[in-house]
Length: 405
Ligand SMILES: *[C@@H]1O[C@H](CO)[C@@H](O)[C@H](O)[C@H]1NC(C)=O
Ligand SMILES: *[C@@H]1O[C@H](CO)[C@@H](O)[C@H](O)[C@H]1NC(C)=O
Ligand SMILES: *[C@@H]1O[C@H](CO)[C@@H](O)[C@H](O)[C@H]1NC(C)=O
Image (cartoon, rainbow, N blue to C red; front, side, top):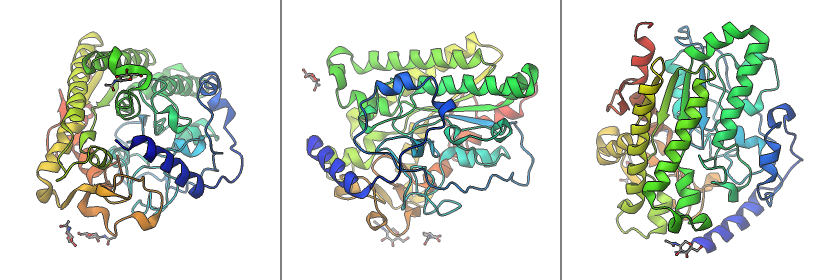
């Protein structure tokens, strides 16, 4: 497997293309408490560049919100700009990323357009949720929710750290606690508890524990853990963190399962697939992870009876799209829209010239991430099971519209 060569090439190209501009200015109070962990990371070999100007409309859509806020925890599947503030190779702050987004500008989303939580915010009658790490203004700027997600982050702290800095799962949960404290100080304990308990928390993380940890055999992990015990470990960590959220008055949680990354262009290239067949060995691990996490969510629901915690299976949704691609309007199922090499999976997407002209008939946007069109379908399924029921024991709309208990 040509992995080391690719990585060297990737570093080289990145160094050429990502010319460092000015020194990074961290919003210090947000980074507080993270420093200890961040210095533990290898210092990245590039200087981070300034975050781009994020001019995203924050006006409410015409309908009034049906929940107070949406909070997002996760990785690049939902990052909306966190990594623009960090020193990392995992960034989506230049075109063609964002070219089909509402502003047609890169925002840090790893997509040509929207990520699933953008579509869900719209469903909830909320503005697009801004990145937490970009918040320097008053607490009121955060009352419709914030997004803590950071590309490269995993459930395990060091997953993805070869890419540079990220905000790991545990650190993101800590940021939720900090947000809660800020709300309590500004609006009082009762109002803060009310806001948090009625808001939706969306968790989409875990794929980097495979891509950047298990599958890379970091720290000899494959010899120490079979996939099953690795999955158990990830699920029990996630369970503990959801309990921590519960103790902060969180009551409505969507836990996203993982997508079939064995079908991602990067692995089709790496495993030298001939006809775009998915890498079954990888998908089997993901299936197992989803199974274990779904079971964990069921257990947790029995423990935390006044909480609504649902599991939504991105694997099922994605396989439905891949199998029935024509029906959904896709005719390119294996090749990424943007990238180089076979399946456009060899070299990551770093310039507009690498991209196809119209992503709307592609399932994959880049080596690892789906297109806006797929994210829209995914969000519809989380919301109401519009195309396929993927949420257990109910979908997001059910949680919100059910009678107060
Ligand atoms: C994982 O790495 C260790 C050494 O670091 C090696 O002994 C082991 O064979 C590797 N496992 C696999 C499945 O490649
Ligand atoms: C997919 O469909 C578009 C038109 O809708 C066409 O231009 C393109 O060649 C098709 N691609 C493949 C791989 O069939
Ligand atoms: C992409 O193609 C779809 C139909 O295949 C079309 O509706 C859409 O306008 C095209 N988008 C662009 C940017 O050309």
